[in-house]
Length: 252
Ligand SMILES: [Zn+2]
Ligand SMILES: [Zn+2]
Image 1 (cartoon, rainbow, N blue to C red):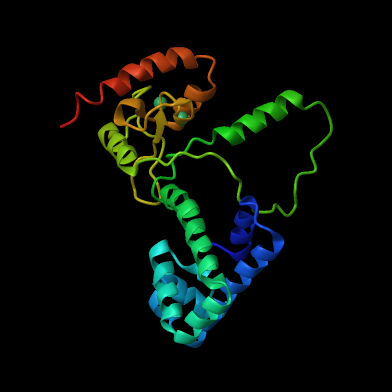
Image 2 (image 1 turned 60 degrees about the horizontal axis):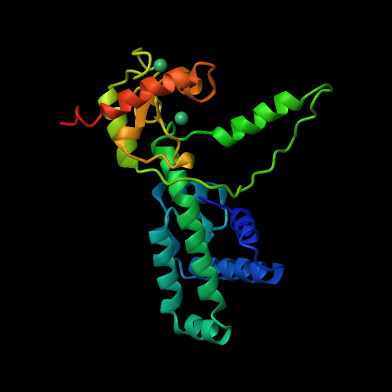
């Protein structure tokens, strides 16, 4: 689930001109309006979103669709109408281009969103931690004013697609016990009643580490933080390399 401003921000990161961006934005709005008039929306929307919509009378737009597949379906509905087809051809395929961009936006932003929902513990927030560390080092005096209305933004970062199967496999064999300290996970997750552990790559993906079971371990949050920031991290890393390597032999 996105909003128009997310798409616009993303188009900006692609370096598109302001006029192209507003063209695409308007095209998506027009397609959305068309689908509302044709009462084609209920087929496309999640049951939950349908409910929310009826309550809040929020206007439907394509950004509410839950995945690329439904987005493609919506596009087909739109272009099934001959007038729309002709309009698109006359308009230098502006609507097709807008949709293609939106699909690309979904592809690039959806997978990580979906991933973090399915496995909220499977990401390393290293970049954020790093900038905090840098600030702590720099920080001298004064009280930070903070931000009363934090803006949301889509940050362009290099992220590594993780194989959910690797994460799932590692969590499954750990059976809720941290592989570093052998203690039980600190709590049960609300999402799926499973023990909360985090999956850590022993050699970071950013450093060329592989996303495989022999490079991943299940850690409690404490050990995970220690593996990244602890004074002891080199020692811990050596231990974790051995544990990760043993994963293959325990495969059954
Ligand atoms: Zn631990
Ligand atoms: Zn980690």
